[in-house]
Length: 243
Image (cartoon, rainbow, N blue to C red; front, top):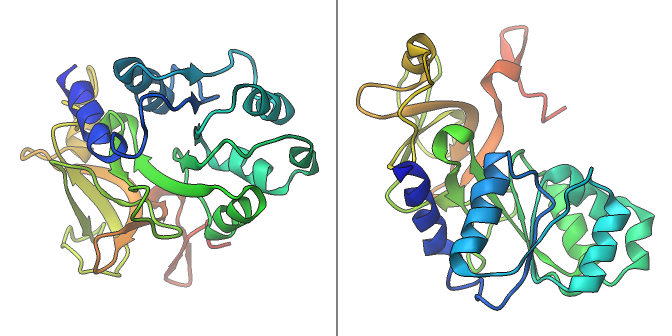
C-alpha cells in the first residue's frame, strides 16, 4: 500500500496547485485499471473533488453529452478518445468549452493529435507516463511547463535513466534506449513469479520498464516505443509508432 500512497503524494506535488478542489474531473476510464483507480478515483476522493464517470462501454457522443451537462474543467483520457475528440464530426454538436486541461496517458499520444484537439476544442493537453508496476505514475507534465509530445518530467523522489537495452550502459540526452525507473512507487515484485521479477527489477531497485524513450537537456522525457514491438530491418531497429 505504501507505493500507492507515495504515488498519490507524487501526483499531488504536480496537480494540487493547478487543480483546485472545487474543479470537476471527468474520467471514463475503468477503475480496475491503475490509471483510473489511482489518478482518477483515489486522487479525487482524497482531495474531495467531484468525479464524473460512466459504468458502461465508452461512447463518444454520450461522453460529449456528459461534458455539456456537468461542465468539468479537467479530463483524464487515453489517445483513442482524444483522437475522436480531434476528428469526429459529432463533437461539434456539443459545448465542450468547460474543459481546460486534458491529461493523456496509458499510450503515447502523437504530436499531431495533440495539436489537433488543442486547435479544435481550445483546450490544453498534457501527458503522463506510467505502468502498473509504478503504481502507476513515473512522469507527469505540469500545466505551466509543457512540451508537445513529451510525457513530462520525473515525479518527485524518482530517479530515471535511459540505458542501451543490450549492454545496460547509461545513455546521454537525446539518445533513445530503455527507460529505467527507481523510486518509492516501484513495486516489490510480481506475486509468485521470482523469475519474471528478476528479469526487470534489480537488487538496488531499478525497474526496467520495457519502454523505449529519450530525454532532452531540460529533463523532458519522450516515449518512442516498446522494446518488444521493435521491428528489425537490415540491422536497423524500426519503431511501429513511426510507421
